[in-house]
Image 1 (cartoon, rainbow, N blue to C red):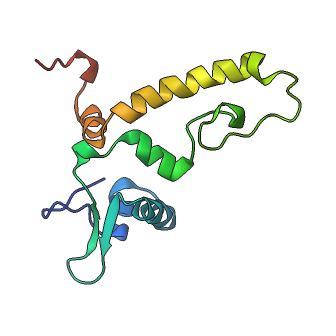
Image 2: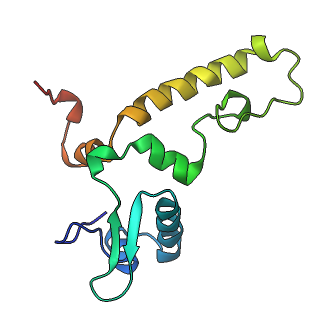
Image 3: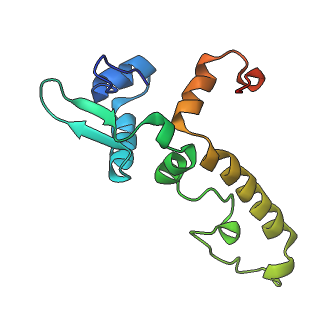
Length: 134
């Protein structure tokens, strides 16, 4: 997303145009982020959208959960939206559930540690995995 000079990310139409996405789609995303407390909006002249916090304090896992729901690939592996499979004879021994729980945990480990600031940096640096912080 493009940032304006005042630290905001601009109005919906500006953001949609700059990122080549439909405004209606963007409006839905911005409303969900606003409802999750990650984005603030201001109407009128000089208005637009801005992050509710610093990018280094916003975690990517929180953003994804706000927009897409639980990280688990299937409901029986979810912590927040758990639903058992109707045809599963043994939930505790189910190899699919155990595997998908490991997938959920791995995704959560990465996304809950990564900040929006780091994600932005990945888009700007040619090979971010070679960056070292001492």
